[in-house]
Length: 141
View 1 (cartoon, helix red, strand yellow):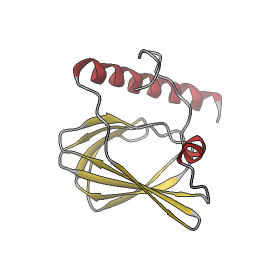
View 2 (cartoon, rainbow, N blue to C red):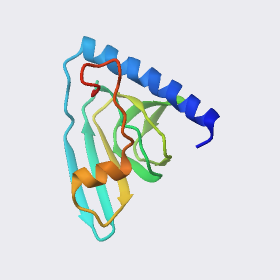
View 3 (cartoon, one colour):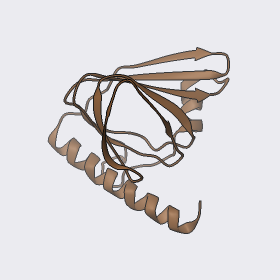
View 4 (tube, helix red, strand yellow):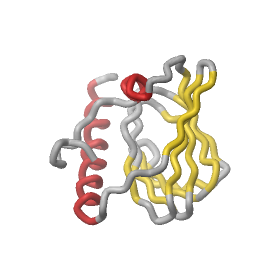
């Protein structure tokens, strides 16, 4: 990644870090239900986001498709700014993408990752950029 793009990415991550800090100071931490499915050569991850949820995503290492199966959700990225997406919707996540999201209605979001791996820790190492939020105790949201 060229130096200018690295600086832009770090500035965007700084914004997301500040949002995470504000969310954790104001609301209890929530874990969203996930399901994991494996087929030959493909890992599919589904997250269920209840209406009214405000969250951030991890930083993605890979380009991969996603589908919003149900729901309406506002999504901010440094590339697009804030947009509201309504199911059914499909898109492509680019490397370096990190999102701030607000679910207007219950939302089901699926991602698809080409891999023969079935160990979730190994898959996460492949598809998620290592990043610790310096504004949080322990660095993790």
